[in-house]
Amino acid sequence: MAILVTGGLGYIGSHTVVELIENGYKVIIVDNYINSNSNILDQLFKITGVNPLFYKIDVTQKDKLEKVFVEQKIDEVIHFAGLKSIGESVEDPLRYYYNNVVSTMVISSLCIKYKVKKVVFSSSATVYGNQESPLKEETSLKKTTNPYGETKVMSERILTDVSYAHPEFSITLLRYFNPIGAHKSGLIGEKIKSSTNNLVPYISKVAKKEKSKVEIFGKDYNTIDGTGVRDYIHVVDLAKGHVKAVQSFKLGITTYNLGTGKGTSVLELIGAFEKVNNVSIPYEFVQRRLGDIEVSYADSSKAERELGWKTELSIKDMVKDAWNFEKKRRTY
Ligand code: WQD
Image (cartoon, rainbow, N blue to C red):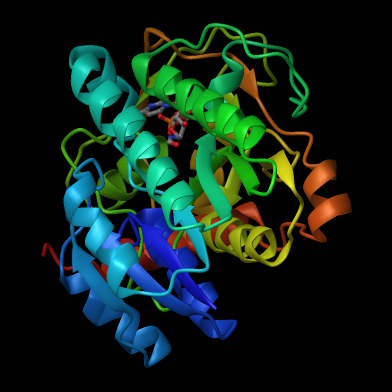
């Protein structure tokens, strides 16, 4: 079984490649290095002992990507490739719409042309916008709070209509909550970019004294301690969810939430990071971040029921592994 993984050198993509290889799959990676680099391939070899086939291609370039479908026998596609910074998407919406939506259209058209009838798509809990948690897959999608979220809604819509037009396809939409942490080896993890404004990379930077303190966006939310609540999931648990999705084959289009079903506040996460890693994380409260929602956590019972998937790693594992990666991270 050869699985084409677009964005396979990215944060979630690389962790999924490890799990796929360790489950005996042949993996073909397509990546344009926008959120990664060739060093990740070396790390993947160190972890798995396998050099996956790799093509440096921008997935919006159909003619280039088609080469892979001609040269390789592809059985399934996991489509990760996409830009994912909310803040960046607000500043540069057209770049996000073009990259994230056109790439989904290109993948869809090539899968139809080459009869690759199994597609797993990397979606996000952002599609739920500001709605009551726990969030269920059948929750209707309202307007999201940013262009990044809209590109995920549009991509889900495109894949849904492809599924209606091609009932012989099996399309799975995986809505991630907040992936954090890193592979236990510390060789792969969440690369921190200047455009990164996710919480845990910031905490790691403060722990490394590369930043003086964490700015906590708001402390007047209606939550346990006034700070935002999210469903943080270990990236390895998330990667294992993709293996389960690859192994399941349901005709039509199916959506799964991949989260722990538990909410954790910003202050609780900082506290866990300090306690587990025996470091001090100074912080200060600042005003809310535009577009942030108060509380978001999953009802992930459908994935447990239908995929036989359940998270196994705890918040302690997540913050331990995040810090382990950060300490080992070379600035490559
Ligand atoms: C988490 C919490 C912030 C930074 C986004 C996308 C989601 C996924 C994950 C791609 C919130 C607070 C954060 C900081 C803070 N990305 N925070 N200070 O916004 O929940 O989710 O990233 O798939 O799709 O929507 O993640 O890590 O930015 O924020 O106080 O410096 O931490 O307010 O409550 P978010 P986040």
